Length: 279
Length: 297
Image 1 (cartoon, each protein chain N blue to C red):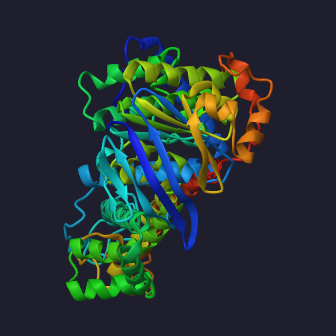
Image 2 (cartoon, each protein chain N blue to C red):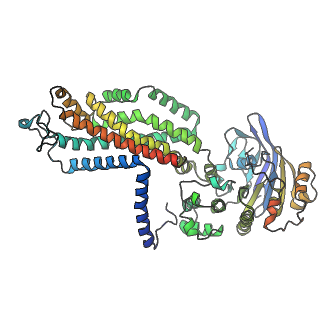
Image 3 (cartoon, chains in turn orange, brown):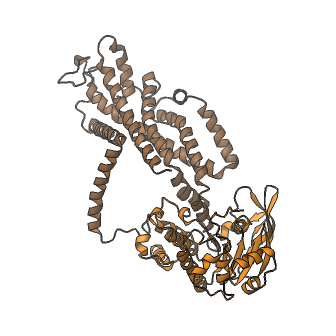
């Protein structure tokens, strides 16, 4: 069973269970959405799948499978073997997501090399930067992160995320810090990569608008647990949990088919600029 | 630094870059007097030291009892010492010795201290506990006293003096690096690098250390100055570098008995050389500090 399979995952910080029995499935080539408020445990769930939980947080129940292989259980962590080539994650806050002392090309090239990509890494790196829609990628490769705009940084971050050609890419609020027109470009780009490489994607957002527009299936997370999951049409069309219903009401003026142009991503229910607290 | 960075056909750009660089340097010197003073002192000291080694006016070790205790004059600019050796040549030569030792100590202390601080701060846990307790113990002794004790115990060759002073300095760099590492390790780009598969050693050396090393670099620059002071101090006390080496502290010690009888030049010129060398590194350290603060790191 290829793809990412999160099975009854539970996470605690100290003696507080912050994530309880979370089930999530991401099939190759598809996009699964995970929606929820800030602090509902979305990011923790994602970090746990990569074995990158912050200090005090522990996986206490369930397991994570990648391509049918157990990578995370309460007492085992095999994520170091699959991080990069099997599963990768990109974060919000493009401004701080790149190392300030290294040139952009170097940072992308590192990922290429680490994953033993064939061909000339330098050429591949410039191809990648071009693929994420950066003009004059050979020049951009020579720049430092502070010389780039926020949108450009986020593109570079995405280039790093897809450089290792992971089976699964987790994108945690990839567009939250960007302005609306850039948001759509970045999401289009991720869609494009997904359809070309067959990569599965887990898109995390507080913004149901973004998720509804891009994802085949949607899970809604609320206070550390999944309260509703299903296909895009079921969740949006007939929400059962009050929190989902509230989110959907926020989308009231969205056509159900979700084939909206760029502006729709601003129509999310919670235009909360506060960064995801990570649990 | 090795990707998509080949210079390519841009000779014009290179020329423009070179003039831009000299203009930048001039602006930098205007804004930072400490760079001007420190840079000038260090440049003079380096030139002087190199001259002293390649083409000393006189052999710094050659005894010439016939000319002993000659005052400064046209023939011996800084006079001669009790064995008739030319003090000028000895100061030039000794300055080189002290500067090189200062730089070696600072480099070693930085290398050892920053690596240990990186490991201690990044890995944490029991490794961190052990390292920090050892550091606490070492730092509970004044650094000069510790260096003196070590030098006495392991014997006073040049190599051992360098080791003694380095051991006394490492904890300061270690602590400083560790504290910056604790901040840098939780930076977004560190998590980002890990999330796309960077190994632990890569994360530590490529993402954490370069972003945490700033304060330690400043400290190491200042340490080159302190090291000169401590090494010449040890030599003055007789537990550092030994005569007949024209190390500056040795010279000050050799001239000390003659000051009361009016032959001040044997001690004073090497003493002034020590001061200038220490000042040069202090000013450069100040400049490095300014730059670091300017970047808001």
